[in-house]
Amino acid sequence: MRKSRWVPPVLTMIGEKIGKYTILEIVGSGSMGTVYKAEDPEGRLVAVKAVRPHVLCSMEKRERFLQCLLVASEIRHESICPILEIGDDDDNFFVIMPLIQGQTLEQYMGRKPIPWPRALEIALSIGAALEAIHDTGAAHRGLKPANIWILNNAERSVLLSDCCVARFTEITKPGRSRASTQCVDFSDTLIPLGALAYMSPEQIRGESVDYRTDIFSLGIVLYEMLSGRHPFDTRTPLSRISAVLEAEPAPLSSRQTLLPMQLDSILHKALAKNREQRYQRMSEFSADIRTAGQSASTAPQRRTVASGFKKWFSSQFGRTLRK
Image (cartoon, rainbow, N blue to C red):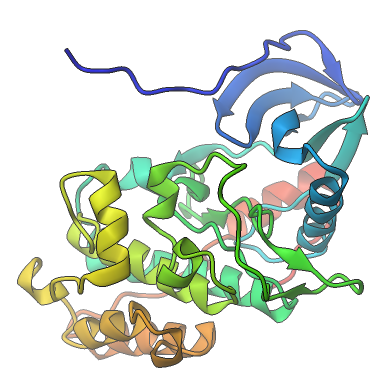
């Protein structure tokens, strides 16, 4: 008999208010909180992420989490889902974001490879978003297909969510992220095994982490988009984490033919265990991805990847996103 997967308990708030927002329905739930579809006083639909109390069980964690959110709320990029508001309702933290109409990359892939021109296009959009985060001195630290969105607009724009709010991001006084000099303690936090499978080796080991961890995570996502399989494909989630730490992925060309020939070497570098051997900047990774696409016999035509979302966001909330 197959065991059911444990799901964190969800507090029903349908019809209630959190801050000025009326809760309409549950959109999703995870270890950090529950996301609700809600309506503001002007009738606009938004997403409300109510953070679970156990995530912020100490004053230190609350302060760190709030500082992370403040950094994230300042980032403006067409491929990043913006934070509209940060609130505290009777000691319950919540975050307001636009309600995303689309599907996650995980759903979009459906365990099958994506045509390589589209996969490279998506990777370049994600890379641009991550580069904008890195330019602020921060890092995403939680990149995975579940927080990459393909929108239901004509352009099928790409949007990155949950930016800079990973649990263990440390922020300096001026609001800049810095690598931790201490080991990360995983003992007081529930982290899904699926999320660990997209983390870099140093992040899994609890070592100091910088923006190069995002380069490793994007390498995993790109490999999966092109092959339909995780680069460290194993029978169980736990053995996959062990493979991230110790194994080398099979060359992409052994799993998928008719791909730009440079992708094997690009992904080998992005997925290096030693971060000193990886791409040192996201811009370098993106430049090689772009060159690989352009040098192939049927190079993909680049599109404006987020114009539809940009127009919708400006019309709804009266703010402009910049590249």
